[in-house]
Image (cartoon, rainbow, N blue to C red):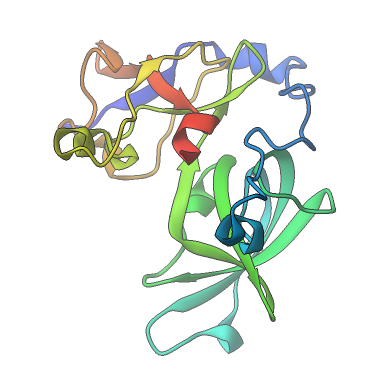
Length: 205
């Protein structure tokens, strides 16, 4: 059985002028880099909430194992690290037909830099959504590592999130009933509304 998945806040609230001022300061990273630690000081990781400009297949950049995609995203909120610009270009190498992150409007992305430019840390992303308190959060997802709490790997716990607007389509396996469950989603009349999730600061950690 498949569900239509909805966030709790009606979509018209978002489309009627809430796209601006989604967060208080997109330039200042939410998580400061600890420059007293050598490894952290030298790393080039930049984590950010982005909005897709385009994602294009790049045949000439393919490797033996992966398909290559050139992506450009508008930077909406810096989460960790820094980048000088409003948009960022990076390469994503995917073992499959296309990158899942490109199916969502807003995503928390993790990119690093080498001598050739920026590249996506493989498969590292979260679909995220604006909240009524001007923050960004991801919905409850089985990919967020909640099950790792059992063996002490993860301390992440889902919490109730005041999502700002309604989403009617999630184009991935979480349509499956096994992953859409109460109390994390409110299930009613064949529809599932996201109630729980995590803010981007917690998803990054």
